[in-house]
Length: 425
Ligand code: GDP
Ligand code: IMO
Ligand code: MG
Image (cartoon, rainbow, N blue to C red; front, top):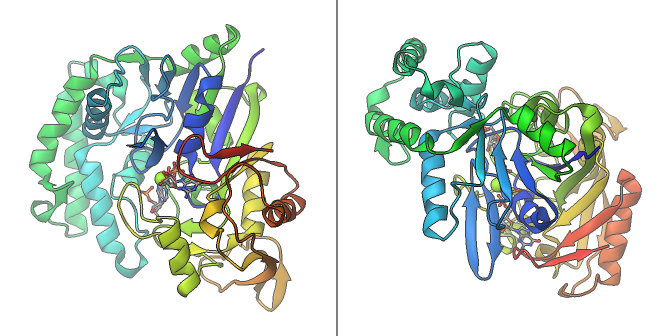
């Protein structure tokens, strides 16, 4: 019985999932996204070309690979149309290879407006969302009010759209939010609504499937399937630093509900992390650096958001958080990204515990958002050389230190954005 492998981020997102999924795709027949939506920005680089994907799985740049947008994903038809058209201009035609699960929920323009309204109402306590409508769409899904991709063929789709929109407008009035002043990706709400309906029509030419049957049959027939995560474990709605999280189940468990595959069908779990940490948006980040070292990480690592362009907060590797993420998803293989960003560092620090409430602990406390956690660091020597073919001795020591702490082998080391810049261990 074939099993589904999973690749997911272990930090606060942007670990390099897009690059690795693309690099692994030649070993798979199907790549499937299981959660999140266009809040994701997954970058893939090869032959001097660069692609950033938001709603589409990162297997699309490999000829012959089938890509499924799973039921756990939420879709903005305008953003998806834009993405498909851009890929088509670059020579990647997705008509035959892109599948969309009927049960995937739709992000309405008014979900995006509500996202903005909620953030405004929170003021200083805002989450710093990507403003793509993620929270409001998952809220409606759970509240049993949402619209799904499979609904767009229904004759009363427009009525159902209007009634959900009216519900949102009432919520906006309650927080005194003025829709007329809103810009969505540079256009007014009403203009966006038009583009959104064009997106809905456009998507009708693609294959809508019952993803759960499609995937389980594919596995029964010996196909190899990779599930691609979005965001990162520390943004998980249950286990992240709530309420500064996204609204979906980012960990391995999300694959079962986000694609309709049973836990017994899960194979390898690839967990991916950067050799340091970054975070966009608000929320605790114990190892964050506000000094020159933080700025060097940001500049060397080009740490600016792939979706929003925001500068990413940067800091040292946080091992208690990494271990937590590994436990939550049962990670079998680790992949370390962006080690090249620290090539010139003389010394490197890693957090091995937190000082919290006068005690030292290796566990993330429940009250992480309200209490100060001071990291306890171990200092290691930098490798101070470029990585290309082999792994320098001191980088090998850094890797072994992480493996010893976390208890899972690091099998893959990435040292550049190109799909070929990897070393297998
Ligand atoms: P994702 O959301 O997890 O797919 O990651 P993003 O695409 O948002 O951010 C990762 C960024 O790092 C992208 O710009 C990648 O091209 C780049 N990248 C990936 N791996 C490496 C690496 O090993 N070294 C360097 N320098 N850049 C990398
Ligand atoms: P990828 O897949 C990094 C963050 C936002 C915000 C919080 C909630 O590229 O790794 P949301 O719009 O989801 O309601 O925002 O989550 N966030 C991400 N940060 N990478 C991402 O995706 C993210 N998706 C959401 O910045 O703090
Ligand atoms: Mg990203």
